[in-house]
Image (tube, each protein chain N blue to C red):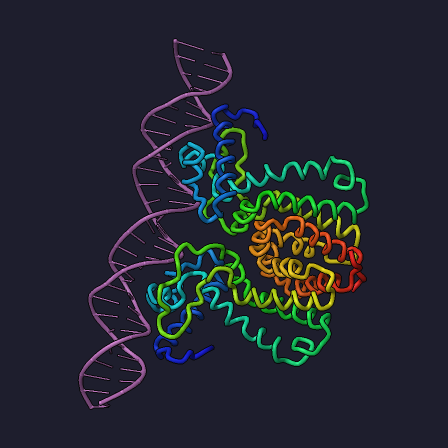
Length: 210
Length: 210
DNA sequence: ACCGTACTGGACCGCTGGTCCAGTTGTCCA
DNA sequence: TGGACAACTGGACCAGCGGTCCAGTACGGT
């Protein structure tokens, strides 16, 4: 996606190959079966290359997720209403939640893999090679989730300042990593999920003050 | 908890020691740091014993969760309203959701550990030794979650037959394994979580038909 | 054409979840 | 009380994992 100034041509090619291989393996194999060695083999590169590029297993999955979610983030910032700026919070939230369901539905395997992202034992590599920044998990930073959360939280708060928007947004988004829901998604329940998320969002915005 | 007819005295003692050790380690160390070997050492038994008794890592965590959640399951079936039978669905659901927040708040580490429960590579041991049944994860069976889900779903459906109670219950419960929420819980947000869950439940029950 | 360096890949490491089985010990019956 | 049998025990063992390392390669500016 980003040619990344100064990135060598072969490096870029390999990066794309690794991301593509990861995506394909995740789509067919379940995250536990997808080892770094397998990804490297499928991409036709060595294991060391994968780690050099993405820092860790989580870093790889995170980078892939960022790429998959970029279009949505962009749309939220620049697209016409109701997804983009301009519409009232209620409409924007319903549109956003629907869009999220689509993204998640297209990347079930990735979501499952990201669910397992709790710790990273080792520190990030000392020096950042080339100009590129490692998407390794720096403490407390998960770009995609953070954006989704803050956007949801803000819209919720805009519509209902009396609610605990922060925590409610976590609840809404927590569903997206829950194993039972990912299973339903695998069985094709994407529209059902979108509708349910819309129901929750609408109920919260319309509901009575507690 | 259950003396389990036919279970040998030393076996029972070891089982309790293992569960206690697991709980203590999970309370202080974060699920990634808690290995089976460590649990065995902390309990003063061999690794083989742990596996013989609980089948797998997941089996062990599941057994511990079942024990921790038993009191709640019992209360739901036999306690006086509003938690037990007899109260209107709305009150029961709010009480249940509050009780769940308490249980989860007391077992954050366990919840985090159970979040990572996707696959089991090997089959269960061929024959069930002694009379006891292995609490190994048989496909699609997670006793505690299943009970929580069906109860939530039924109460939701009783109050609002027009909603997708099944999926909405998954959303409500999905929050309990989400990493950001478990972090907030670690910072003492248990009451906040309970309140937020009540808000969602109440909004769903009171909200307008979509 | 050349040179410095970013990039590469596979051998290597510590550790994990899980298996196995020879030896031990509780329990039941005579 | 004692003997016999099965359930239980525990630690050596295994394959495979995520992650590290560094000698060698080949890209791209000049």
